[in-house]
Length: 108
Image (cartoon, rainbow, N blue to C red; front, side, top):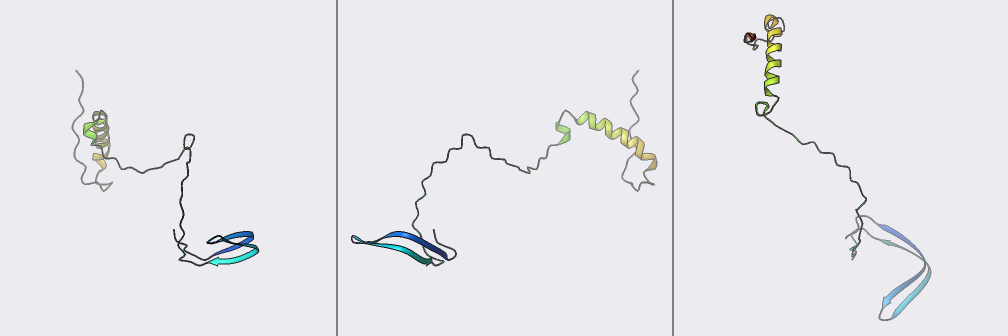
């Protein structure tokens, strides 16, 4: 890790190991670790996740051809009903692409 900004440290009653068996005991130390200082850090943490719930929200696009579903016949019937209602007024509604619907099937 490397510091990205200066870090001020105020230490009270600090014991500082100067190496080679030398130690310094100071009542008050104020130092600033400058940005860019490399830090040797070993992170070894066990974090239990057994009772943790992490909410996830995903927008997943789905493209299912309607013709391949059990709803296809119902939507065709609905489309025919809408076509029968819209066709007579297609010019007023500015819908020139609406085709003349099939005549309804009358059971015998």
